[in-house]
Image 1: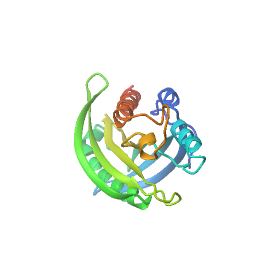
Image 2: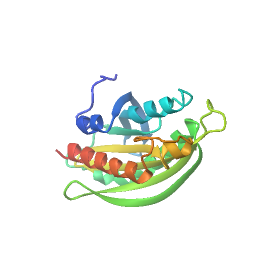
Image 3: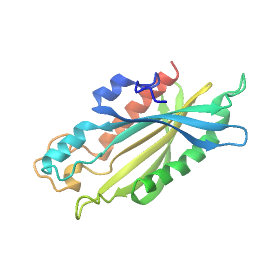
Image 4: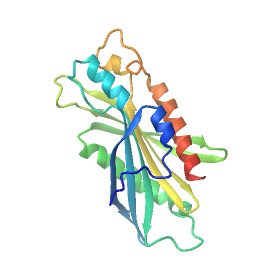
Length: 212
């Protein structure tokens, strides 16, 4: 049952500074392996500032989530045996997470889902994260003639017996450009590179909490 309290692995101050607020908290069965079942407790945060700015600039025509970051803490059933690190399962978890993430995007109504490159990013002092890129289009069925081009990131972070799946989505071009908004200011003029930079900062903060 959800507690409606942030998990200890969530860097709450970093999310607050970036304009995110908790939009959803859920616990679910993620997938099953030969020797264990893996459940996940997910904390999904959405960017209120960008959503509010876009709604105001479009006279409330587009009141729609435009950026999110979700942290899913992994729970093994039964628990991992003593002395076994979660990193032993990392490659399997990554493969299953990639497949289920693409399926989740499709269930949410996104189209033109494409899997892209894989990057290796430094996190913390000595950590590395394998980040998979996706692209997709949100057709915005409630808005005639408009759609939202989005970029997504997915990675699995592990430390000893702890692990999280981190997913994120953000506009792949400035919102002002995608919706033809003149004389816009931040956050509507924020570029994909700026969104990417902020995601990396949040990812680093998540990793530091995971390994603390």
